[in-house]
Image (cartoon, rainbow, N blue to C red; front, side):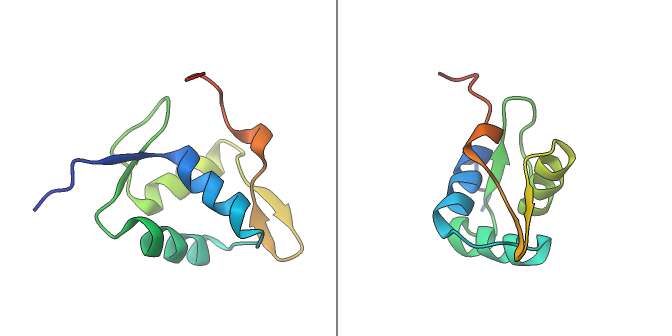
Length: 84
């Protein structure tokens, strides 16, 4: 059964902010899969149909992660506001 529901990448960034913890790519992937499920697909204002790994790569390539002492996190200022 295919999952046609797409989740905005901002929901993942919001999850990161709420967790108040640092991530590695592996730990972020695990957190995304636990929260949204293995069949979840993600979209942003410029891409769609991404897996968790695809979304992590997309966000990293666009500088959405902020390095910290315990891994990386994100910042609210990193979220685009095209939909407001």
